[in-house]
Image (cartoon, rainbow, N blue to C red; front, side, top):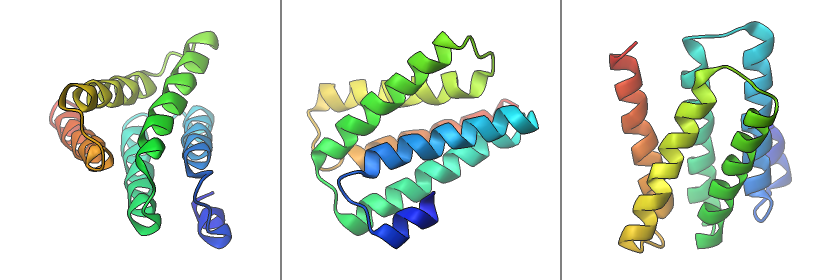
Length: 129
């Protein structure tokens, strides 16, 4: 999906694409019953998405939409009664990042903030295996 994104040089639809990538990654997670590698996979996807953000200079709305899309993805997670803890972890991390965004009224730096928080949270995840 990321290669398709590069081929079509998508900009406005980037948040939807990111959601689809995470959704597909999670389906792959379920199919292969991944455990340790799942957080790393999602982390790498978000990292790539952030690089795309920098390349295309997406606006502030992208961050807002990404948060909402991941929120919706989490609701889908609850609806299907999925029991893997990884999506919950990622959702909580991004939710906290968004709350920080609101408190500090950040605009342009929001995507960078979310990326850094996910990065730190992933390092914590590795330490607490």
